[in-house]
Length: 397
Image (tube, rainbow, N blue to C red; front, side):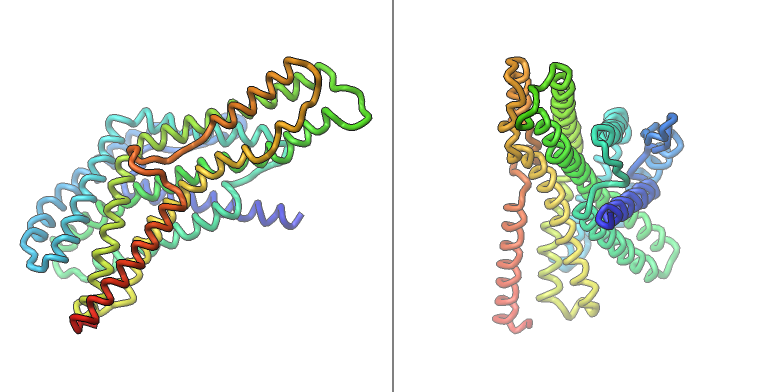
């Protein structure tokens, strides 16, 4: 009982975190649709919101124009090559991601809304399959990942607000505010990718739990030792449940693939920019520490950028690994009956599960998995070691 209460508590907290992130993205003008309750069951449904859409478009275009007019000339005339590379890279990545957000809001609004409603409909469908009442979002793993993501969002907002407080004139304040909105809005792409892949993982996890516990118990009841053979009615009910499981797995894979295709380009852009920015920023902190009196804050930015990449990779890997778990449940051991139709149905179910697999391959360049995390970690450790050796040899450390 206490374990169930803990599960409900963490899933409820995860739902509150998602609600906070949704309103945070709306304030930044990244999300331009509303989510409200509809129907007798108070089902969540995504709807068009024209006021929010116009607010998002005007905010994005105005802030991008201010950044191009006032920030770009300042970046070009910087004398420090490292700082110029870092600023240029961040500015280009932010503007490209802002353009991607505008394209999605203007030309792909229907596809985005359809995808959101598909996710919400899938969660309701999965909950209706199980006899157990499930509240909130995901379980303990999803809650831990979302908690780290909220910490990253808070630190990100705190650092940018610190820059805003250091301005002296009204024009500088407006320019920095627009730059903050553009940068935070661009970074929301990687956060949305994280939530999307984590939602796919949560859906797979819930269906896998249903198949592992309830469906296996139902199949085991068809072949109890010493009991009468299963009737056609029992086989028909079990066959319907197998068909529902296959349909749900197909739908999860389809919705996850559509989400991946829709956001793979902007997510890849901001991901590559994050990785490169982390390396340049680490060099600045290690070698040129005299120019950065606040070492703790700078190392916090390095760790935060590093955590963003790791969290996105973990969410994608969680979705991929959850789509493969069902293959290890040995459901082929449940013969259930001597009826040929039942064996055909069970064989189709097992073969479909082997085919049904979710994969995350940005533009087909590489597959996101734990191996990417290990490669990234080893590369960063090697890079830090090289930079520190270089700093010692040149008497900068």
